[in-house]
Figure 1 (tube, rainbow, N blue to C red):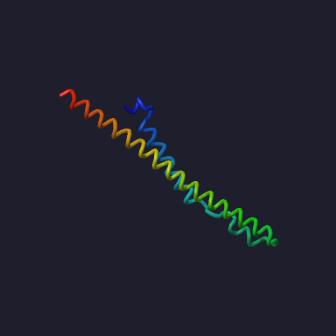
Figure 2: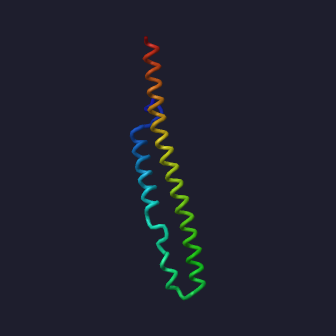
Figure 3: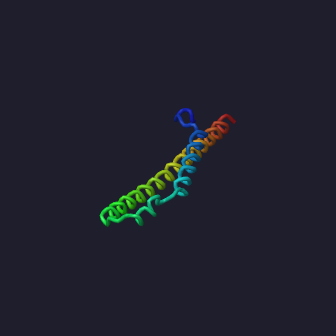
Length: 98
């Protein structure tokens, strides 16, 4: 059945693992690389702009981590669902022949 739907469950599982690793790496990476940069600024305008930029990056980073985690879950479910469906069809075919 996996061939009919063009899904390689092992490949989907591999993609899920890689996306999970990527999500973990993103979570462990430095969340605010500009944290110490604002202390050396003499301009309130530049400091405010840098603060807005940092907030936007943080928001985008959080969204990216969430999206990558969701994609990993979808690929894992695709792999598991394809294998379960193949197993169910194989069992049904076996019972039908008996």
